[in-house]
Length: 364
Image 1 (cartoon, rainbow, N blue to C red):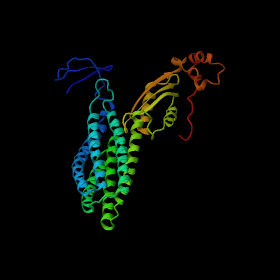
Image 2: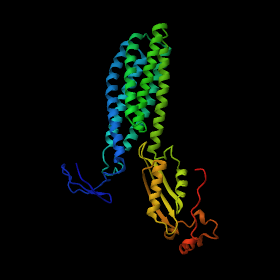
Image 3: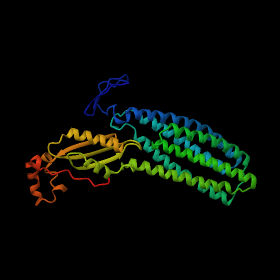
Image 4: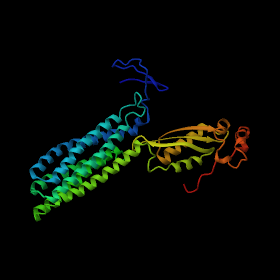
């Protein structure tokens, strides 16, 4: 354990591993992802991922042997996918463990983004597995091999039960809003659909000797897996590119901030995600003369938290009396005769003559 005293990004350490009084640029242990509700969610995710990892690893080995003995591509493809799931769940578990570590060094957000990297890689892995299944299925449709449907049904039935249990663990005990958990859940759901398909195809082969049904169902499974992989990859890519969350409108935020008393304009807006469930926001607020900037920021912070679910925001307040030169081309002064006169007029304006805050668009 160590105790860090933060002074403009530099800390003094005093710990048992010899790092005494070493100046190192770090972030505070009280950064946002160590909020109590976030820590509880992290613990739940780690436990759910660990249980899912253990169960999936055990059955992947069993199903692999069963697929070899039965000669079934559906079983082998499902076993291969489950082997990929073991790796994916393992990476997700490592990501969940790393994300709980406090910020240190130059990693001011800690290791939260590692979850997004793993989610992105998991999505690509799902797409790759789907492609491999389609290629193998095409070969088997052209040249259907002999299979043993009895072994197929037995192994697939066990797999169905295991995947169902793992899906319930991740879906009920894990945070499905967390993209890291969601990508792992997609892997498991792919296995669940695959097990259902294997049971149906093996039953059909047993009763009617329809051998082409085994690879045909594998193709359907591959489509489901591939679509899930594309979706996870796209979502993780948006976070890594620091795009605004899809469910939060930047324009709506601007209009609601403009409704606050004393706010003339909102600019330099940035909205991004650190993880799939943790968002951050920053902007500049141009205020009327005489407005208390602390009160405005307090109201804006409450607005962002309560209406948009943004718990972590940074806002810089500005006044035309101080930043007149920077804002002389502001829209509220476009009806003035010349830009050159705007700054001087702003600087000499009395509070009663100050331009009113711009009215927001109705209906937002």
